[in-house]
Image (cartoon, rainbow, N blue to C red; front, side):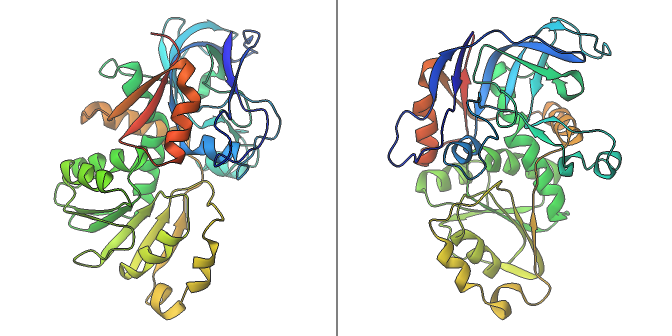
Length: 343
């Protein structure tokens, strides 16, 4: 089968072909697994973190990609919850142990045996992949393959982020960074909390305008100050500077939720500017988002179908994977980018 692989860590400021296209054997499903013939795979900033070594794969080479949509072609002694011919999605959570204290409490995202699709095991930048049946999710007919892909990470991690903000009706919330996840979060917030005021911080004027088109009440640069202090903020940027500024924009008792698997070190000097009275006093909080649970994925897909809303997507032919990765690195983003493996 055709596949893209990461075979080494490299700097995308100097490398324009970080992925290599190869031929790999078609995977064979183990007991309890499904074989999925892939149609699309969302493209995520996490792939950049893998390539540049901030969250490196434990072994090379690896097939990246964790927002996978395809058709079940084979199964091996599964429970029968998903049938051959069903359309399913695969998310960042590939597997967890199922019996530790975290898994038993529904926090399988914190399991020490957590495996990530496209990092710890081969993912969706390929024609086929295998996945445990428990971590495959039926896709509602309302979504095309390309529309469904971003729901599996950008949407699900956004859903978890909103829950961690303790958002409620009438509150003001900020979104720092306006890529694939944040644009879905804005739509979701306005569905869940129609009277919410959503402010967007983004470096790009195009992203700011896109946010206004989606009904943000205010949009400015990541260093601008909104008209009023905010109850909570979700940060989806890969750097530190917006984190420090976001803390300045919180009300007393406000919460900043950082939705990023890693932060780049290029601007770590901003951490030295952290001032306790200015940034953290008056019971302000910082909360990180760690992975997603299978429940997050299932609940967000259900909500998206009920709303319904469609992600803004830009599709790329299979041979353009490197181009799409570099565009995310360069912040050339409007909505979500999706790799089309099979039409």
